[in-house]
Image 1 (tube, rainbow, N blue to C red):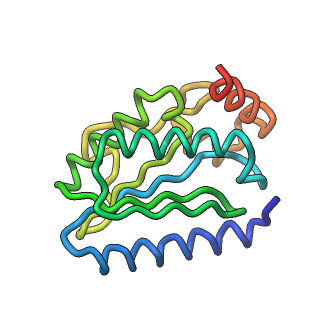
Image 2 (tube, one colour):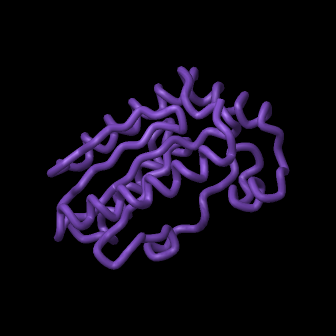
Image 3 (cartoon, rainbow, N blue to C red):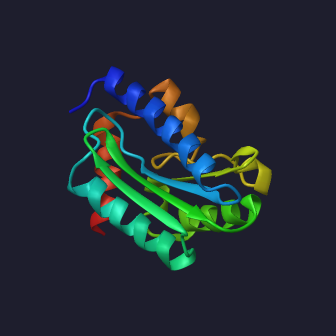
Length: 160
């Protein structure tokens, strides 16, 4: 279990590490994998299955020039430096999120030399909620679904 403060600090550390990698590997694009898991427990058997599937999917689609995997109490983080055009890498990573059996539980952020690439930049809508299909961001902010309801859906997806 982690606290909100620990989660916020981990996001700051992840952003700083992303900047470091982009500086260390100029000309490459950063693909950052994290697992979408609600609540204070960010590392468990479900998150590890999602993370393992995400790493495998990234390795099947890309040939990273560098990769780093961090298995932290605040959540799993995978960093992959890849060659290519940021929009094309975002399209390919979004395809993983959209088509992989566990893709909706993975977050594949693409950061190029000019900054992050959004789904909107490649013509995609916001990611849908696992439960109702509305924009996930809306349901998260509004607290539309309980953590238990979300975790039950995640478990169903992972174990099916």
